[in-house]
Image 1: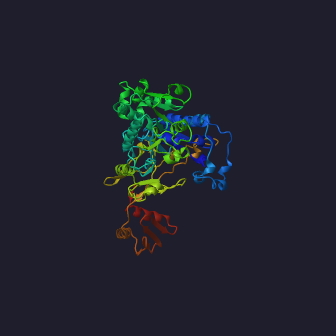
Image 2: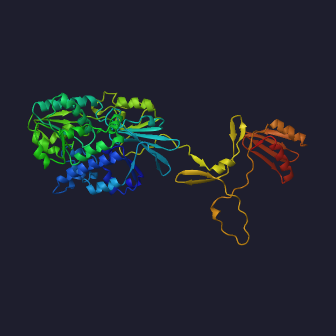
Image 3: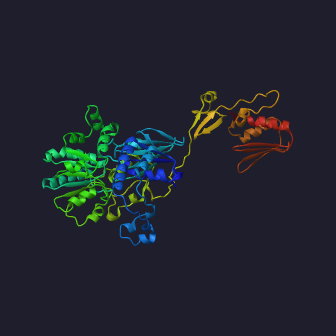
Length: 567
């Protein structure tokens, strides 16, 4: 029930594609926090998605197939699809804008108070422009949420690891989807396969998202093109948001890695694709219609979406180039199985190369990270606590930490393994001023505090107690401070213990005779038989029990007090 959720923290722009469904259709009224590049590039990804879907309107909309009995009869993969009843039609641009208008922008290391109870802080995660890890902390506890992080040197700001230290709990998710592939090796393979195809007169199709890895691929190609003698081959980037994406990447300077930031002050564009555009090597178009069809020349390299090959301009190129074995499609996005993506296009003559580039943490990097930040507990999805099903012998492809990680499944509610034991309470200066600490042991001082505890928005404050009210003449007026409790005059606190033998000697000195001492489980009972009086001495209390003789009780009390420290 999303209406019970108070806050959504968005880690990166790939995580927010379903946001309009939540903010517009579930009764969610909470706050959403994200960094500016996350919101702006997330907008581009959603805009592209909406645009692609709206280009191919469906004449009819069918929903009976979602019935469980019918779904069983459908061909795979539909019959195995999870939670089909919750599948929805794509949202509209209006819903996208409405959802994004509800996001509050935050910057790295900015502390955001939530209801006074906890503070959240986004940290750079190194994976994408504006991608964040989140710290959720109270005064004495700290939970880190690490999702979609990268330790590799790519275009975003590097990951902030230091701030993750001293966590009680570290929640870890969004690791690499292909733990066995090395991103650097894959980029090299991408470039060499691309060059080989183009040299043989074929075209290269790269199904991709309009932001992210494409910036790094263009940068590698920029360095590679001249050395490979491919400078005459045009690069086309086709997406409804291609222009915005290339421009955004150049203006988010403070979210980039250091050497790209420093270029801005030269001034130079931080990314080399600016130069590729100026020299006409890289051209971008909103779609294949219009200008593109006039400028189009082969052999060429086309970057376009959608990586699933189910919609978008990529479908057109798959059909256009699929019949020739000179052409190549290179899959770089790790989100989809390339074999499933290609299934509807079979039989295919074109070559298919799978070079998934996923810069997120792999298991070796995770164990190094955990050794450095040393959280007390690690919480992660169940899948990470065992080797992948396809490679069940690879014990290195799982999270191995001490104590073992707590795992969770989809939609499970977790109780984290720590308790809130302390609260921070502030004390008003004038109250602090009135305290007089007394040393009771060397190095230990105590002071008693009488105060009114004022609590609002989970913030606690000790205020000076109200002064006793002066009696007002005439009619009794209802005072404003009636709800504030009156302060009683305090008796001093007593500490110390009563040595029974010495106490008995003192009583004898003061004329009491016939004294008997009995041991009890908790202490001693001193009986004054002649006075029919009983003194119960326990570790934390002393009772004087005598029959209606107030004078006697006071005398005995004063004798007891001689042995105790007043405070």
